[in-house]
Image 1 (cartoon, rainbow, N blue to C red):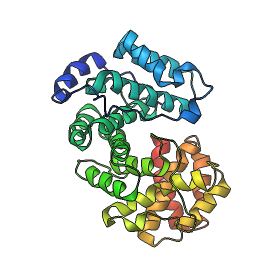
Image 2 (tube, rainbow, N blue to C red):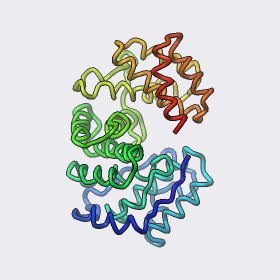
Image 3 (tube, one colour):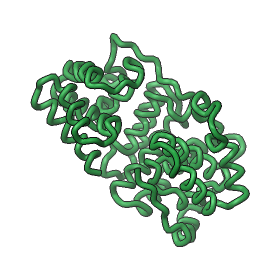
Length: 314
């Protein structure tokens, strides 16, 4: 888990000019009011609440509050670091509007920038997407810009809604931006939010095990591979209660193997992409997950392992 402290002093001046051509204050009627992971934050320390970070930001200012975030997060697990980043990112946008963008880096597995960007889209709608995407690409390296763009996809779903029509609208909006990797970037954020509802009620969408590939075949062809790439998250959540073992990877792999080759490749790539972090980025364990998922098929293993290695090396 990388914890990076950006050169915020210089960036603040630059991005204040870059972003402030629109109103930076969330409007009262549309400001992000999503309850974030209410089931998960109950009975937890105060810093796992919106009110804590709103107060810290108001008392300390954005730069000092970000330092506080990093200090608290350094004592937390990787999973909790990401949650803290999300909580801070939402509070940062609520208190600072778009002017807070330079504060969030991709530390905490991108939690802060994911939530900040998504909150801005949820608040201001499609009209702010191009501006935020330009900011992502100007501020970050190529790979980190994809992390930033991932938040755009999350925000578009919260803006349009959680049905299949809203998913298509979100993907169409994603398609208008320039990106080096739509599948992991904006498309990925949209599919993740559509499937898992991570930024609203934190419950998965309705899932029918007799139609495990829904809604991928109903989407425009340009979006189908990305849809299959992200399905493994939904399967592990709904079918296996987030149990990541060789046995459950074998079951997920059996679903991918029902697809025709072009979609099967995307599906196994997604299994590798999701499997690496669940293996703690441990190469040997990740290899075992891909081996189990592929069920003896050399091409399926290769598709899983090639994608997984990118995460392990990174």
